[in-house]
Length: 159
Image 1 (tube, one colour):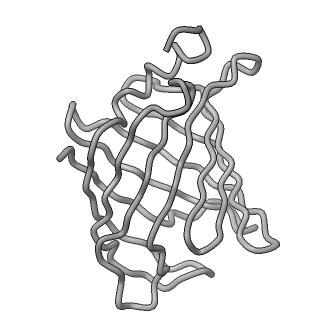
Image 2 (cartoon, rainbow, N blue to C red; image 1 turned 45 degrees about the vertical axis):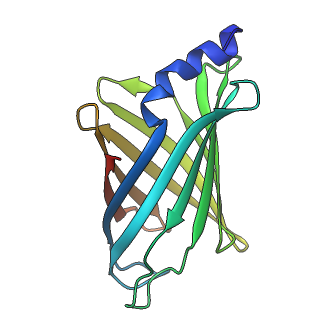
């Protein structure tokens, strides 16, 4: 990380390494409520230190009719012109998320997200909360057109 654009990514060092988590999804128009199966996350800097790559692998699948995601990929970068962290999310059910965030405020990182799901574009917010040095929580809510609805929450621990 030698240039100033990559230097800002140091704020995301927390997400590097191996993590494991679980949680739950609430019932929405996309899915019924279900307990989130175990998911592993591997985070490391790539492409000359200009991107933080997070690879998500679902170790167990839900048996309650929930989403059947097996893999996900998130790339974090920094847009110096806008002064924002930027991220793209891709998963094995074909969804893509475009994310911006001003960065950490204390132990919280809040994002504005647009999820592309088929032909739909859905506004979402994500909140990442550090739980000490070895844990983090992810909470998401979406606006399907009738206001914000909590959709899912997971808690991760460092392996």
